[in-house]
Length: 356
Image 1 (cartoon, helix red, strand yellow):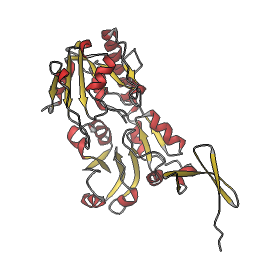
Image 2 (spheres, rainbow, N blue to C red; image 1 turned 180 degrees about the horizontal axis):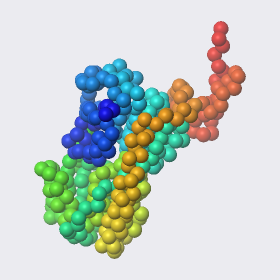
Image 3 (cartoon, rainbow, N blue to C red; image 1 turned 180 degrees about the vertical axis):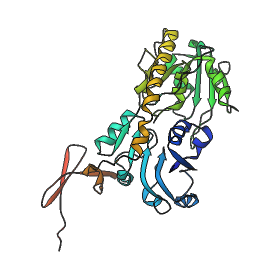
Image 4 (cartoon, rainbow, N blue to C red; image 1 turned 30 degrees about the vertical axis):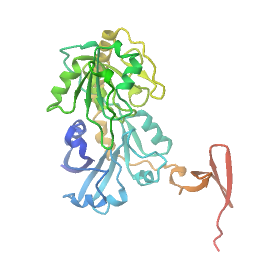
């Protein structure tokens, strides 16, 4: 059996949110898993990888320097599964190292960006297994797993109109690394039930099923396991109108979308109908995903496309403009000049250095 190195974020080893992809990979590869904290660990962390020679390396939702990784690991193929909410911006210089990867996206928006820049990208839409529903939940109760300070109880209040429009907010306060939360005002005293830890995922699901409404916890998602799990339980998910939430939720049909910049009251109606639409949507999608998911195994070792965009590969040139750093992108190359553009309306000609 071929050997595969799976490199992921240490947090996912605790939450087991990557288990579905490990199960797919295990059908073809002998897997060595390696987890680290990209916020605190330096490059030397890769010296701890026990096996140094692999057929395939999979980078799961993290973006280490491939140049550094090669100092410790040898491999034949490398694939990267980016998360839309956490990877470096597509015009960041580190993406030039990823030209040798097959990029496998669960987010259509990220896939389109990768293709635009000529990266070797594939797209597949993930669906969780639909769950048996024992309780459709109180139509006026909300579950929020607060993972960032950006999506918080005040967002719930603004989008539902006022505290009087719902019965209970089940607030699960387990924030992502480097995130902090504000204390709730006194007006929430009789409306909120706070948890900070569940011993099992089943225990958390029981709390979630007490509510018909579920607030997606992040501004952006690469897959969005938390809100998709809620949809798998037939919850009416309310989410920012951003990827990947808006790639699954049809506003007013199987959930609701709102503007995070300008949150306004949502006209929520026919919640039970929306919940039933949601579970059918997940069931149909899951059936298709069970067939499509094995394409991933072919993509891992597929030849990497060699049409990397010249714009991405050029060295960035920066200047200070009114004390702000502006990146200039090459848009045309002539014999004597490179023409750069920024703000889409200013053009600068910079004479190419002579060979002498």
